[in-house]
Image (cartoon, rainbow, N blue to C red; front, side, top):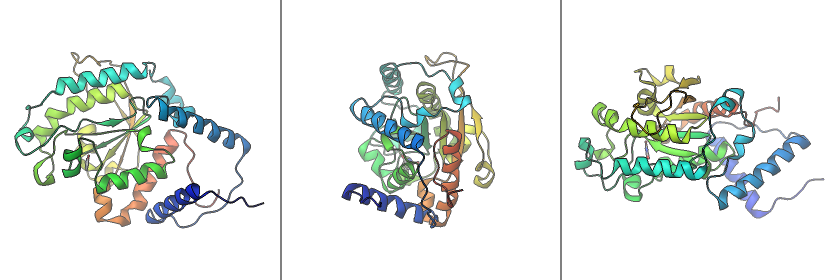
Length: 286
Ligand code: URA
């Protein structure tokens, strides 16, 4: 017998549907949900509730570890990681290491999210809204990133979000090589602390800086890379064994300019979800 949904669930379902439509996914098929999946979802709900009280509990997606991810050392506690991130923020200080500090930045935009996140999104650099609020991806591009995250079946609080450069480039210009090179060590240290199972590089600037290659988005997308953060041996987080995965997708600001590419971005996110063993909505129930 058909069950009716409460208003909140209906609104959430409508929002999810709207997002998939924007992504170019139109066909949905009803599928019987196997009892094991229902149990797993219920367990994830419980974990999600725990995350709300203690923001740094293991994520729902951590329930399904891929073999490779399981090898990664992820033992440090939440408070260890919060403290380690605080040390990095303190080391940044009121940074004057590159020209961006005198080009109109209001504040440093460090990073936000779950210090034990399985997924870390890395953007280019703060825009006006982020500079104002001190948090990455809070403007229009951030709204779209939030939608992308929720289409994956997770929440913004579940992931960690940071940028290659932590200060707003004037007029939102692309950060220069020197600015990226100066700021990257701090991003590498954030990665070493959070130890995500996968990093999603948003756009070419993030992808090129993280991977250290100069290639087109067309060539960079569509595969999963092995990634080791480049850490100075003197960094407190230095550990030669840290290794994670990395995928590249379009920057949300680019998707706002060219929404036809959302379909491609969704393919990238589905690849990330498969890598983590997360259930992915299929088009035909196959
Ligand atoms: N674009 C980015 O690359 N990062 C932000 O934080 C906001 C917009």
